[in-house]
Amino acid sequence: MKLSVAIAVVFSFIGVTGLSGAASAPITSKSPTQILAISMAAMRQAGSFHYLLTTSTPGLAPVSLSTDCAVAYGKQTQSLGRLRDTISLIGKGLYVYANETAWKENFGVKHPTLSDEWVSVPQSNKNYVGVAIDILLPSVVRQIDRVRGLKDIGEFRVNGQLTVALRGAVTASPAEFPGTQTLYVSTSAPYLPILVTETGSTQGEKFTNQTIFSKWGEHFVVNRPSHYVVATDKTFP
Image 1 (tube, rainbow, N blue to C red):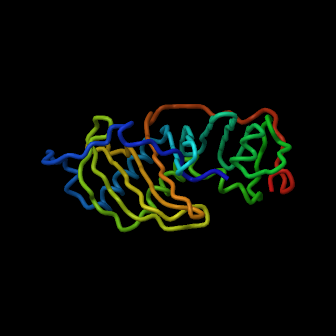
Image 2: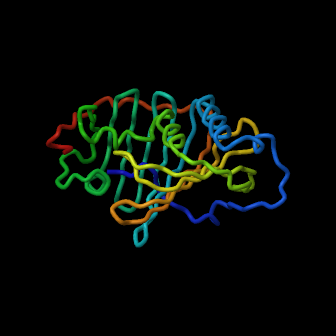
């Protein structure tokens, strides 16, 4: 099963730099809770965006998910070594195209029979929520907005863009792992998220996640497959 967030990149790769004595923008005078609310409203107003989500764990190669995200549809792709998969979500219709390696390593199917063809995953399948998470805009907003105990930890430049950083705790849920999340919000209107980082652990293994946002408001298309098979509890247990 895929993680809710994906690959971690060392901060020097994306240029996160702390600031001292930086001139404050108006948003920095607001409370962390107010800044978060303003940023989440800006995400909803944008209507669509792209994000690159990266997860790394000690001793394993980083894994990256590339996602185009809108209110009612989205598309997520992953390519790593021999692993390939594409997930399309149109309303509540969930479709997966994956090779044998992806079915085994990403989705935990020991003996895949659905490789290299489009597969419709019904909502009744126990894997539906874990696969569909973080593909639609409302889901991504909920993931960021679930953080508690927010603190303003200062201003930083992320790839040259001035941001204010908010840090808080992520509590565990059936689809999530406990950890700490840091959200970097642009200090320029419309105050959109630039970067989210997260650290935590699952099954005794520490992980680091990073999400980079881009392409706000850009139009993209996700087509429903013209032909697909329906996953069952036997083929996708």
